Structure formats: C-alpha cells, structure tokens
Amino acid sequence: MAGALCFAYTALSLRIHEHLLSHSFDLGIFVQVVQSYADGNLPVSEVKGPDFPVLGDHFSPVLALLAPLYRLWPSAELLLVAQAALVAASVLPLAFWARRTLGSAAAVVIGTCYGVSWGIASGVGYDFHEWAFAVPLLAFSLTALGSGRLRAAAYWALPLVLVKEDLGLTVAAIGLVIAWRGGRGGRRLGFVTAAAGLAAVALAVLVLAASHPGGFDGYFASHNPGGGAGTSGGGLIGFLHQVTLGLITPQEKVTTLILILAPTLFLALRSPLLLIALPTVVWRLASDYPAHWGTGYHYALPIMPIVFAAFIDALHRRRASGHSLGRYLAGSAAVTLLLLPHFPLWQLVQPATWRTDPRSAVARSVMAEIPDGATVQASNNLGPHLAGRTSVSVYGWKDSRPDPEWIMVDTKVVPNHRWPMSVEQELVALDIARFRGYRTVAERDGFVLLSRTGQQDATRPRPGQLPGTAG
Image (tube, rainbow, N blue to C red; front, side, top):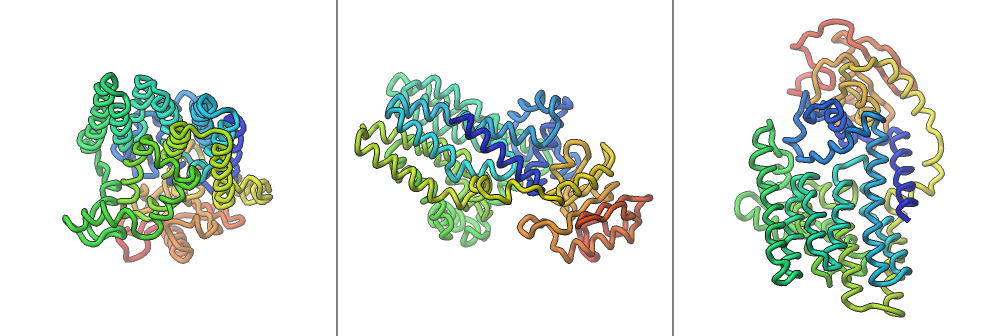
C-alpha cells in the first residue's frame, strides 16, 4: 500500500512539474534552500529576496537531510520524490496499528482512505513543503501514543521542532496528552515533552527570528488582529473576535472543519488524540490570510495523520467489530470516494495529465540559452526549473533582485498560475526592459527570453516595475 501510494504521489507531482505548473513559491524556494545546505552554507533563497536568510523566515533545519541526496541528484524532482516517499511512509504505522487493533480489513480501508484523503492529496499536489517530514513523525508518534508506548511517542514527537517553528506547539500538545493518558508514570514524561516543545517555539520566534532581517513578519502579519479579512477591528476586540467567532467565520472555515472530520464520520471527536490537531487548526483559522482557511495548498497535510490516528483510537475505544465496524469502514470509504474527484489525485485518471505538452519542450530549449550561475528573473512557473543552476527570482515580485542578467517570461501561462502581474502589466514591463537595454534572445510559443546587453541606469524602472510605482 505504501509503495503504491508513493508511486501515485510521485507520478502526480512530476507530471504537474513537467507541465510547468509548479511554482517558485514554494518549490523554487525549497530547491534553493536544499542547494544551500548541499553547498555547505546556511540556507538562503533568492526567490524570497537577494541572499534572503530562510532560517529567519521559517525554522526548518530538517531540510538539511536532503542535502546529500541533492548532491547526487541536483534537481527539483528530487524534492518531489522525497516528499512522496515521506508521506507514503506515514501510512505504515497507521495501517499496522489498525491491523493489530481492528483487523486486516480495517487496516486496508483506513490505510487507503488516509493515503488518498483530500488533505494528503492537496499537499502532494502542490509543490514541496517541509511538512512532508512532519507527516511520518506524527504518524509514528500518535501510533505509539495510542498503543500506550509513551516514551516512543515522545521520542518520535521531539524532532518535529526541527521541521517548522509552529510544530513546537504540536509537540507540547502531544506532551499534554501523554501526561493525561499516562497516569503517574507518564506525567513527568509528558510535561517534559510539552516544555521542550514550548521552549523550541520560544527559541525559534524570540531568538532565531529576531536575529534575521524581517523575522517571522509574514506569519505574524497574518495573525494580527488589525482589521484584516478574519477580524472585526484591532486591539482587544479584534483579538477576541479572532479566537471566538473568527474561528468559524467566514463560512469557508466551517466547511474546512467539516471536511477534516468527515472521512472519519466525525468519530475522531471521540478520541483525545484529536486535541493534538488543535494548534495547527487554530492558527490556520485565526489567520487573516484566506488561503489558510480552505482545503487547497498544503495546510491540511500535518492534520491528516492526527485525524486518522484519532479515528483508529476511537474505533478501538468503542470496541467496534463485526457489523458495526463494517458500517464505519464503509462510511469512511464512501466519504473519501465522494471527495476524491475534487482534489489533485483525481488528475491521475485524467487523460490530459499523461499527454505531452509541446510547450514544455519549447520552454526547456529556451531555458537552455541561460548559462549556469546567471542571475535571472523568471515567471513564477518557470522558477523551479531554473533554481538548481541559476540565481533565479520571480519576475515582477517586489523583492526580486533588480537588474538581472536574464529575464524569461511565459506570456501564455494559465490564468490561475499568473502571478504577480496581470497580462497588461507584464507586457508593459517587458517593453520597459527592452527600453532599458535588454535585447530579445528568443521568443517562441509564448516564451520570451531577454538578455541584458550593458550597464543599466539604476534611476530607471527595473524589470517588473511599472512607471511611476515604488516597485
């Protein structure tokens, strides 16, 4: 089962990337981060900004584990395959636990429903993210916790603090559940685990972020009760709204909560293991950034192993067996199948996924004109293909390095992948670049490649900046 899921995840990710539908935000960023580690340096990302120190943006030193593999296979594809393997591996502890407690049929159904659940599908269908490392760690930790192996649960949980700064709160939640379920013997272990998780969060936010320019500004800005999309004013009133009614308004948040629990027929609510999902769920719903509320992107990826572990635990606690167990499993499978066509794994059965896109070959031939090590600004969907061998940033992004040696733009990119400029803004920006001395090297099938021919006047608008704007 894990092997089949790994194959499916890999095929989906690679086909999306092959069709030029991956993104500089986030795949291009992570390629540059892993490349930095592979070169023996602290991680920086040119996509985020010139020599941008990534550890001050998100604390994810676990990505250094990919550096030796990247030296053998320096490409974005390595990250996509690694993510597929990590996520697929998480099915093993959950399915084996289900088999021990509920039987082989339950293991097959629960393992499959988990592996093709919408949260997993959304994660593997949208680039690469550091949370891929969290998924197996959470699955092993919660399986051990549900089986009464408290020390193993703590040991599997502690490395989560190296995956991302907010996961220290998840470690704290695991520690509290260990203290609750472990009796006198587990109380000390649980409190120590919780304290370690909180200390890791404090270290990342108060010390490491403070030592880097910008700190976790983007994260804190999305949780600032100052009248954003999810609040009703600033100050105390805004904060109270965020942590009460703001958690269920607008309606999209309620829909997401329902979809999180629906594959388990809401039985996950009967297990204390579900409490471990609270930190991730709350920070998502309390955010002012609409993408955090919905079912797209990768934000549900670390929630799925928690929900399905709670499902197994709830079935075990109810001593479900025979006909009653069969009903629960059939219901879970039915909900999963109903949701499947609405999420990325469904692309695997669509003929268009397997057709060769002739524009992909054209894009690669045009990109081959750019020499290794050059500074480039490229369309968002082209950045991941250049990140491994050039210093690439996003064309039109306000923080991109100005006056690159090369500019490459996909003028025919599909509308929902066009960012950060509209078609009109992009055409104006290209004309400005030509006026400033860039010459057209290639223009084929919507791909435009420009090269700088001389020194640029720094007082003139830079590529991607419209006249009269601040950039």
